[in-house]
Length: 107
Image (cartoon, rainbow, N blue to C red; front, side, top):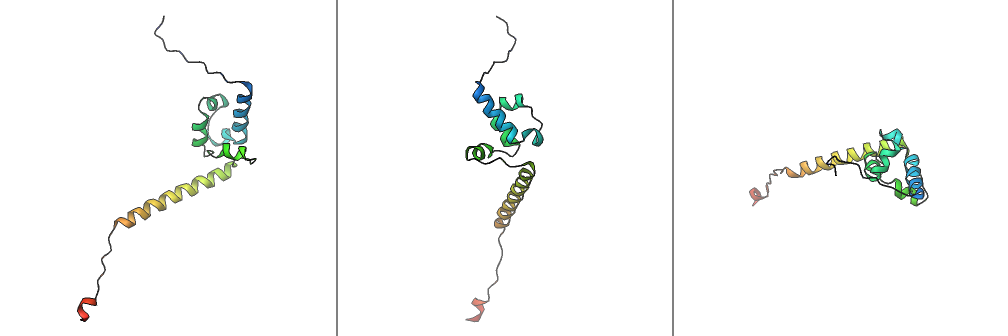
């Protein structure tokens, strides 16, 4: 028995391979991130999320195509803008504003 590490062979049936290959193509992953089909098959959910196509499975299951690359870019830009505005809002709420009232002087 050797101590050299070896890769575990993972096998999937033809139907599952066709399904993931279809998702890979329809989600246009090769144009969004640098990933081959064989790499994608090792960690499909990770690559879908990294490419901005996490909703691709839901789209395809409901009869819709996944987002096009331009739509993915706009979606990612909007997500970044919303994250930035949320952070700014949280920072703004951490500051106290002093309010001076003249009500006490009028008695």
